[in-house]
Length: 454
Image 1 (tube, rainbow, N blue to C red):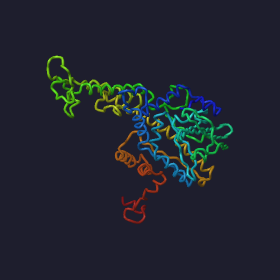
Image 2 (image 1 turned 180 degrees about the vertical axis):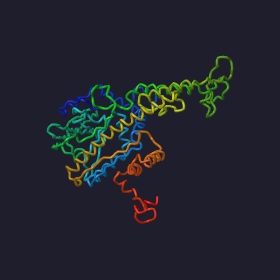
Image 3 (image 1 turned 180 degrees about the horizontal axis):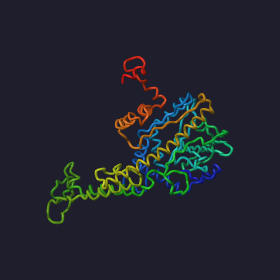
Image 4 (image 1 turned 90 degrees about the vertical axis):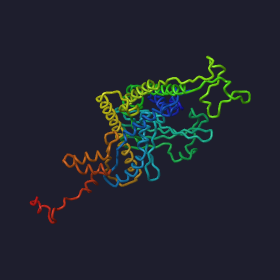
């Protein structure tokens, strides 16, 4: 891994990220990819970290919809946006695992594509007074044979002047842990289209959007960098992995066996021969200690106590990660009062809604960048646009039950019909309003003329 110090020296910048924060990101990545330090010998990963990130991302994006409406410009933006939103759950999972991701748009022909950059591939450089990242270095790597190529893309916004600079530099090395010497961007085919230096004026915000997990950073106090959704659970995830290994050993160690005197077996090639397919059953002894020819080994299994302890660890992980009890633990053994279970569900729902708001903020910024690109490169006629969101409640819901609930509210005059149709069909309220039929006359003719018949 290329060191922060080498990037700082090469780019002539200072990266305000502590070594503790860098180590934390690395440890979160190791947890996610099942490479933590305790996974040695017989201890295997239960993949709890990746499972937690996946479930959290699903809770955030379940029933969620977002679209752009308002004009011909909005229609163009919607085309680009819908492509990006196709895999939003996967992008959200990366953010949950490593504390955040950056959405960085780029132009490809007449289309605007978006690169998702994980926390281990970008280095924050400057932040505004509101905590928004205003300068950063993004890293991309490519290996050809024994040569490792690295591209560093440096973005910086001067908030006072509105001048935005983008710098691209490429490096090649035989060692994957160093940048090596500088080379041409053209040395890597996919980088040949990048401009070495670009200056854009009158820019109000960074041309990249940072989706940050909303929890307070207690590793780098005051740092705007996000925290992994399983940051508090790392130690308990270790305990769960190691406890599971104990459970497996209990089953293996108590496996039924028959200890038999060697004289009870046929001799083949000068050695006692265990019958085919019975090697797990028999243990050959030269005298089993009490003169018996056979002795059964069948100890009691302590599975109940072990599984109880394992489940308590899982419940602690749920508490650490703002997950409702029973999300990863056994829901049939939740030893909590009804009030505690309800409180855990409320906590989970509140946490997911906070993360939804963080994602919404990042997506609005992303669409703003897309609109700036459309202006700068004249990709579509000017026009207003509005970014719409429909999140649900952050937890998987019964769509039919939710429809019945909203229908009841609309019938009672407490919910607009166009909102109901917009939610059901996934369209704007303007289009939904067009679907609502005009009142039909009771017996033909003018509606008002028949009003007195009621």
